[in-house]
Image (cartoon, rainbow, N blue to C red; front, side):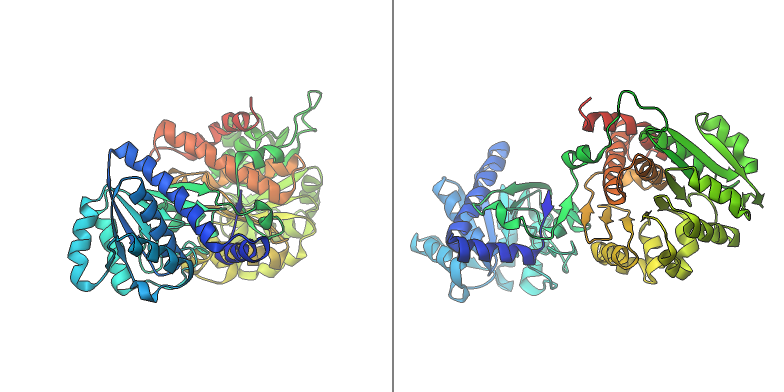
Length: 514
């Protein structure tokens, strides 16, 4: 599903009004009707009749005025508080506020002296309709508006936000000083980019995307982000010909593991096999081969020279042969941080001609000098978590998290690679500017080894001739689905990375309709 920025949505609105000829007040009426229908559905489920509407000064407030009118005509008991007097309103918002006044409906201006009454009204309402701020908000709310948000959150029995919870930045998902924590949100035309990014994504409740009469063709030529869905992933997944053999389904090389972290190699290999790889070769320190062979009996092993339990490969001929005899390569998980690892990663980057995944300690190895990525002779995917992304960019983690899309996009375009910025709402950025946001997954996946499972899935799809960006999109989505099923089976606090890996096959079957 496409995601639009607030600015893109403004342009679409303007084109619908000015070029197509749909009056703005008609679009507002359509939006209000959709919200009213959702409100009636919620009230029916709660056996409620009392509604409080909180209206702002812009078009979001205009929607709220129109919603109040619809609910009044449907027989609900409605009270309305607004942030500014009606004489200050402009355009379509003023039209809808004036209609209410002409109906004899009393609207109350929010002021410090009536906040106690507002709080009591919130407490008594079966449903609060939040129409204080819309998707274009990009400044911190303060004063009486912020007080109103706090009161709604404290006293509401149930809240429905119009378009977006008030206080959410519709572009970045940032909380602008404070925000309404909605139980339901009705947005219009297409979801906004900030809605699927955290922390805002946790404040939307159940999201409904409503059609308000804007032709969807107006978004056809926009460069938009995508919210990954199962239909998209189904188209990405490679076919499985009946007469295929293990070479058909890809030979992947995984350079991973150390004496202290053998499990990383295990998880990568298992997840690669479960994602469809025909053959997985594990290049690991020679002394841990017996440990791994007991866990991954299907793998082919390439024991490498080691020092202090980690790979210390100095033979370029051996490494080149391993790389050349693979269809895709993963390097990094569990290697440990030391100069030998740095040298190994540098050699892989310089010698590899096959699609390459750089994860974990490979990213730590290149962080001091990311210019080494300019020496890549192959397509590459990196899979950093926010702290690793910060180190790669020479930034801080908070800065990366404040604009996850911007961080991933800029790094992907600068180095011509695909970036998978992990975390809640994983961002996948391609070198050509494509962006996808992954909606699957849960907090239980914040567990050791979860990233190794994802890296193994990505390299598996690369080995099956899936393009890097598409491989990353599909792997992140299925990884999240498997994590969601693991959480359902084991509980989010009790699941492990192995639980995720074990459920990959079931999710692949579900997506492919088996």
